[in-house]
Length: 150
Image 1 (cartoon, one colour):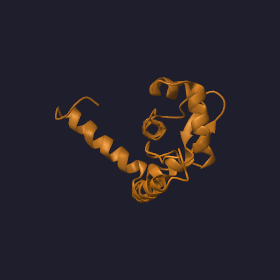
Image 2 (image 1 turned 90 degrees about the vertical axis):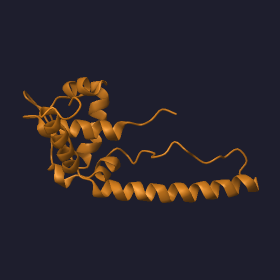
Image 3 (image 1 turned 135 degrees about the horizontal axis):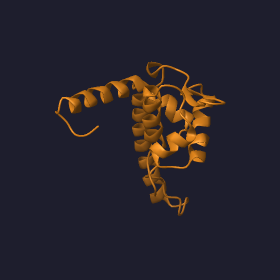
Protein backbone atom coordinates (compact mmCIF):
# COMPACT_ATOMS: atom_id res chain seq x y z
CA UNK A 1 0.00 0.00 0.00
CA UNK A 2 1.34 3.40 -0.97
CA UNK A 3 1.72 5.85 1.90
CA UNK A 4 -0.32 9.04 1.90
CA UNK A 5 2.07 11.98 2.32
CA UNK A 6 -0.48 14.74 1.72
CA UNK A 7 -0.45 15.87 5.36
CA UNK A 8 3.31 16.30 5.59
CA UNK A 9 3.48 17.82 2.10
CA UNK A 10 0.80 20.40 2.89
CA UNK A 11 2.44 21.25 6.21
CA UNK A 12 5.68 21.77 4.27
CA UNK A 13 3.95 24.00 1.72
CA UNK A 14 2.15 26.06 4.37
CA UNK A 15 5.39 26.82 6.24
CA UNK A 16 6.97 27.94 2.95
CA UNK A 17 3.90 30.05 2.20
CA UNK A 18 4.27 31.77 5.56
CA UNK A 19 7.88 32.63 4.76
CA UNK A 20 7.10 33.79 1.22
CA UNK A 21 6.35 37.41 0.42
CA UNK A 22 2.97 37.37 -1.32
CA UNK A 23 0.87 34.59 -2.77
CA UNK A 24 2.41 31.44 -4.24
CA UNK A 25 1.14 30.01 -7.50
CA UNK A 26 0.05 26.40 -7.87
CA UNK A 27 2.92 25.99 -10.32
CA UNK A 28 5.49 27.23 -7.79
CA UNK A 29 4.09 24.99 -5.05
CA UNK A 30 3.92 22.03 -7.43
CA UNK A 31 7.56 22.48 -8.41
CA UNK A 32 8.57 22.69 -4.74
CA UNK A 33 6.58 19.53 -3.91
CA UNK A 34 7.55 17.65 -7.09
CA UNK A 35 3.96 17.19 -8.14
CA UNK A 36 1.43 18.52 -10.65
CA UNK A 37 -0.21 21.97 -10.27
CA UNK A 38 -3.62 20.30 -10.61
CA UNK A 39 -2.87 18.19 -7.53
CA UNK A 40 -1.87 21.36 -5.65
CA UNK A 41 -5.07 23.16 -6.67
CA UNK A 42 -7.25 20.20 -5.69
CA UNK A 43 -5.56 19.87 -2.31
CA UNK A 44 -5.50 23.61 -1.62
CA UNK A 45 -9.23 23.78 -2.42
CA UNK A 46 -9.91 21.65 0.66
CA UNK A 47 -7.75 23.96 2.76
CA UNK A 48 -9.55 26.98 1.28
CA UNK A 49 -12.93 25.47 2.12
CA UNK A 50 -11.80 25.26 5.75
CA UNK A 51 -10.58 28.89 5.77
CA UNK A 52 -6.90 27.98 6.13
CA UNK A 53 -5.79 29.46 2.80
CA UNK A 54 -7.29 31.80 0.25
CA UNK A 55 -6.83 32.05 -3.49
CA UNK A 56 -5.96 35.38 -5.04
CA UNK A 57 -6.68 36.01 -8.71
CA UNK A 58 -4.81 38.16 -11.18
CA UNK A 59 -1.20 39.26 -11.54
CA UNK A 60 0.72 38.25 -8.43
CA UNK A 61 -2.10 35.93 -7.46
CA UNK A 62 -1.98 32.41 -6.14
CA UNK A 63 -2.41 30.85 -2.73
CA UNK A 64 -1.88 32.67 0.57
CA UNK A 65 -2.44 31.83 4.20
CA UNK A 66 -5.76 33.03 5.54
CA UNK A 67 -4.97 32.39 9.22
CA UNK A 68 -1.87 32.77 11.36
CA UNK A 69 0.31 29.70 11.91
CA UNK A 70 -0.59 29.71 15.60
CA UNK A 71 -4.28 29.40 14.73
CA UNK A 72 -3.90 26.26 12.60
CA UNK A 73 -3.31 22.79 14.04
CA UNK A 74 -2.23 19.58 12.37
CA UNK A 75 -5.77 18.40 13.06
CA UNK A 76 -7.17 21.31 11.02
CA UNK A 77 -5.03 20.28 8.06
CA UNK A 78 -5.81 16.58 8.53
CA UNK A 79 -9.54 17.34 8.52
CA UNK A 80 -9.23 19.64 5.49
CA UNK A 81 -7.58 16.74 3.64
CA UNK A 82 -10.67 14.63 4.29
CA UNK A 83 -9.51 12.65 7.35
CA UNK A 84 -7.17 10.33 5.42
CA UNK A 85 -6.62 6.86 6.78
CA UNK A 86 -3.93 6.94 9.48
CA UNK A 87 -2.83 3.31 9.42
CA UNK A 88 -2.18 0.83 6.64
CA UNK A 89 -3.26 -2.01 8.93
CA UNK A 90 -6.84 -3.05 8.37
CA UNK A 91 -9.37 -5.68 9.30
CA UNK A 92 -9.85 -8.98 7.49
CA UNK A 93 -13.17 -9.55 5.78
CA UNK A 94 -12.55 -12.89 4.10
CA UNK A 95 -15.23 -14.72 6.05
CA UNK A 96 -17.34 -12.48 8.32
CA UNK A 97 -19.05 -15.59 9.76
CA UNK A 98 -15.73 -16.99 11.06
CA UNK A 99 -15.61 -16.61 14.83
CA UNK A 100 -11.80 -16.42 14.85
CA UNK A 101 -11.89 -13.61 12.29
CA UNK A 102 -14.51 -11.84 14.40
CA UNK A 103 -12.35 -12.11 17.55
CA UNK A 104 -9.21 -10.96 15.71
CA UNK A 105 -11.05 -8.04 14.11
CA UNK A 106 -12.48 -6.96 17.46
CA UNK A 107 -9.01 -6.91 19.06
CA UNK A 108 -7.40 -5.11 16.12
CA UNK A 109 -10.26 -2.62 15.79
CA UNK A 110 -10.10 -1.72 19.49
CA UNK A 111 -6.33 -1.25 19.33
CA UNK A 112 -6.47 0.83 16.15
CA UNK A 113 -9.27 2.98 17.59
CA UNK A 114 -7.24 3.72 20.69
CA UNK A 115 -4.12 4.52 18.65
CA UNK A 116 -6.08 6.73 16.28
CA UNK A 117 -7.61 8.66 19.20
CA UNK A 118 -4.10 9.36 20.54
CA UNK A 119 -2.86 10.56 17.14
CA UNK A 120 -5.90 12.78 16.58
CA UNK A 121 -5.55 14.27 20.07
CA UNK A 122 -1.87 15.04 19.45
CA UNK A 123 -2.68 16.57 16.04
CA UNK A 124 -5.00 18.96 17.87
CA UNK A 125 -2.16 20.08 20.15
CA UNK A 126 0.46 20.89 17.51
CA UNK A 127 0.17 24.15 15.56
CA UNK A 128 1.89 25.21 12.38
CA UNK A 129 3.66 27.80 14.55
CA UNK A 130 5.20 24.93 16.55
CA UNK A 131 6.56 23.41 13.35
CA UNK A 132 7.81 26.78 12.10
CA UNK A 133 9.61 27.37 15.41
CA UNK A 134 11.28 23.97 15.12
CA UNK A 135 12.38 24.85 11.59
CA UNK A 136 13.74 28.19 12.81
CA UNK A 137 15.81 26.42 15.50
CA UNK A 138 17.17 23.92 12.98
CA UNK A 139 17.95 26.65 10.46
CA UNK A 140 19.75 28.76 13.08
CA UNK A 141 21.84 25.73 14.09
CA UNK A 142 22.82 25.13 10.47
CA UNK A 143 23.76 28.78 10.06
CA UNK A 144 25.98 28.44 13.13
CA UNK A 145 27.54 25.32 11.59
CA UNK A 146 26.00 22.98 14.18
CA UNK A 147 23.71 20.82 12.08
CA UNK A 148 22.94 19.27 8.75
CA UNK A 149 21.84 21.20 5.69
CA UNK A 150 18.58 23.18 5.83
